[in-house]
Length: 296
Image 1: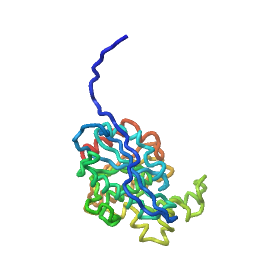
Image 2: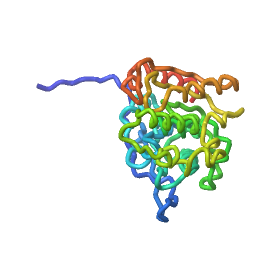
Image 3: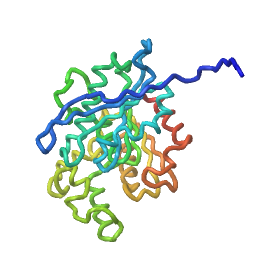
Image 4: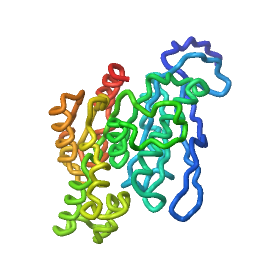
C-alpha cells in the first residue's frame, strides 16, 4: 500500500560528531594524551546551515575518573537540549591517575576556548557558551562558573574561557567538607566497596594529597571559595537522599551565592539519590530548559 504523508517539521535532525581533538597534554606517566570533544549538533557535514547556535559544554562525573571513557556517556540524556537548538559539547578531561588539580578544570576551560576559537567551523555562537556537569563534573562546572582566569593555560589564549551560565547537578562545592563526609562514612562503616585509605579517596587523589596537608590547594579547588563579582548565573539540582555527595554541598553553595548577591536557582529533588532517575524526567528537564532560555 502506498501512502503519501506530509510530516510537520518540528525538530531538526541531530548529528553526532566524535573524535575531535581539542588539546594534547602530558599525563603523569610521561606520555602525551589527546583530549577529545564530541558534539551533538543540528548541523551535519553536508548541512548548508549558516545559523549560529548556543552551546553547552557537558562535563561528566565519576569521581574525576570518568573524563575519558565516560565523557560522552550522558549524551543521549542531553538530546532534549539539542532538540532545543543547543549544541552539546561533551569534553574529556585528564582523570585522577593521569594528572592532579588543577589539570581537570584547566582542560575544561581549554575546551571552552577551543569551541570559541572554532565557533564558525562548528556553527557556535561564541557569546552563548555555557556549561553543565554532574557530580565531579558538577564540581568542575562550579569552578568554571567562578572563572577568574587563574586556571587558564596559554592554549587558545586569544579568546576567553568565560561561560555565560552553569548547571550543576549534584556536584561538589567544598573539597575539605566532602573529604570529612567520606572520612566519617568510613568510620561509620557506610562506605562499602571503596578504599578505606584516606589518601586513596578520589578527592585526595584529584588534589594530589590530603586537604589538611595542602589547604590552599583544597581551598582553590572548591567552587564555594571562588565566588566573585563575575560568577555567572548558576542552576543547582541535588537529591535530598544523595548518599554519594551529601546535599549539604549544594546547601552551602546556595547560601554562599545568595549571601554574595549572585544569581542562583536551587532545586532540591525530594527522595532522589545520586544521579537517580528523578533528574531525568520531563519536570526537571523543563526547569533546565527555562533556565537556559533565560540565561544562555
